[in-house]
Image 1: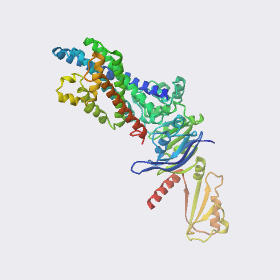
Image 2: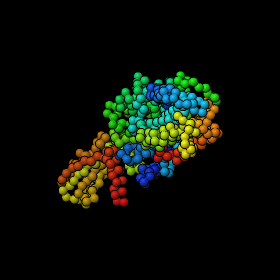
Image 3: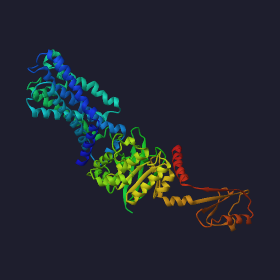
Image 4: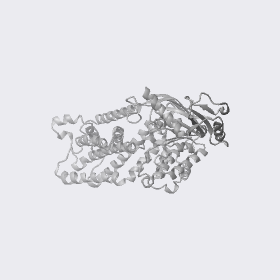
Length: 253
Length: 314
C-alpha cells in the first residue's frame, strides 16, 4: 500500500473543501437550519408527537441522513470527475498507485467531509430542538457506514459521468426523491398500507429507520434489517468498483 | 551506454480497429535526449501514454529500468516523470501545493528542500504561492515540468513541450532540458519542429502512421544533411563518364543527360572548380547546373510520404 499517496490525495481533497468553505460547509448548515425553523418550529408545533417523539426532534435523524447522503455523493462524484474534466486525471494514472489507493483517497476524503457536515448539523439541531441520543455509538457507526457507502456510490457516478449534466442527473432524479420518500419527515407507519409496501423497496427507508433507532430507540423496520440493507448497498458499490478496477472502464482506454 | 527503456513490438489498436502503434521497437539509452519527430496523429502521444501507464497496449512489452510497466508498474512508474501536451492544471490550486501533491502521489514523503530545489530550477520559486490561473502560459508549462520532476524521476517524457510557445520561451525550455540532461535525467521529447530536434537531441526517431521509421544519431543525420549534390545537365547525352572526370563522387544519371556530383559543403575544398574546368576540357556543353541538399526536413518528409505511398498502393 502506498499510504503516502493515499494521504496526499486525502489532504489535497480536504484542502479543496476548506478553500471553498462557504459553499461546502455553510450552505448545508443554512439549508438544514431552515428545515428546522420551517418544519420543526412553524409547522411542527401543530403536529402531534410521532412515535412518542416531538416532530421537531423526529426529523433530526432524517435531516442528518439526507445531508450526509447527498453530500457524500456530490463530494465523491465531483472529487473524481473534476480531474477528469480538467485533464489532471492522467497524473493519477501515471503514478505508481493502484486503483484501490485512488478509491481510498477520494472516498475517504468525501466521506470525511460529509461526516463533518453531518456532525455540524447535529450540533445545530441541539440549538433548535430538545432531544437525547439513545445509542450514541450506534449512531456514529451508522453515520460513518452511510457516508462511506454513498461516497463509494458517488465515486462510481463520477467515473461514469461524461459531463456535468450526467453528474447532476442521478442525484436529482433518483437520489433526492428516494431520500425524501425514505421517511426523513414522516414515519412509514403513517402511510396507507400500499405505500408502506412500496416504501420497503426504497433502500433509504432502512437507513433512516436504523439511524432514527439510534436516536430514539424506535424504528420502522428491525435494526438488523437496516444493517443488512446498508451492508448490501456497500457490497454492491464495492463490487462495481472492483469491476471498474478490473476492466479499466472509463479510466484507461 | 545502458538502455533505460526497452520497447518490444508494442502495438495499440483502438476500438473500431484504428491502429495507433503498429509494432514499435525502440531502445532508449540512459542519459540521452531522444527526440521523437512526427506529424500530428503519428502515434507519438500514444507511445508515451502507453509507457507511462495512461493507456494500455494491445500487445508487446515495455520495461523501464528493467521493470515491466504492467507486472511491476510501481517500480517502473516511480522512475518516470511525464509532462503532457495539454496544460492540465487545477486553476485555483497554488503552485507549491500542486507540486507537493505530485510528489506525494509517487509515494515520496514531503520534503520542502526537494520542492524548493525543483521550483528554483524552473524559476518558479517566487511564484510558489500564486494560484495557477494567475500564471502565464509559459509559467504553467513550467509548473507541469515541476510536477513531473517533483519525485526525482530518472526518465522524463516531454510531450510537445514547445508547441504553441514563442521563440524566446522555446529557447528557455531547451536550456531547462539541457540542465536536466546534465543532472543525468534521460529525456524523451516529442515534437513536430525539426529545428527543435536538431537543437537539443542526441538521437532522433521519426514516427509516422504508428511506425518508427528511423532512429539515428542526430550527428549522422546532420552529416547526411551536409551532403550536397551538384547536377550538371548536358545538351547531348553521353554513354559513359569521360576518363578525366572519373571519380567516386561522380556518377552519370540513368538517361546519360546529366553528371551528378556529391560533395561535402563543410569540406575545405569542394572540388567544384576542378569539376567544371574538367567538364570544359572534355568539350561537354552545359545546359544547366542545379544543386540539391537533403535536409532533415526532407528526409523526414520523404519517410512520411513513402509511408503514404505504400498505403495508397495497398
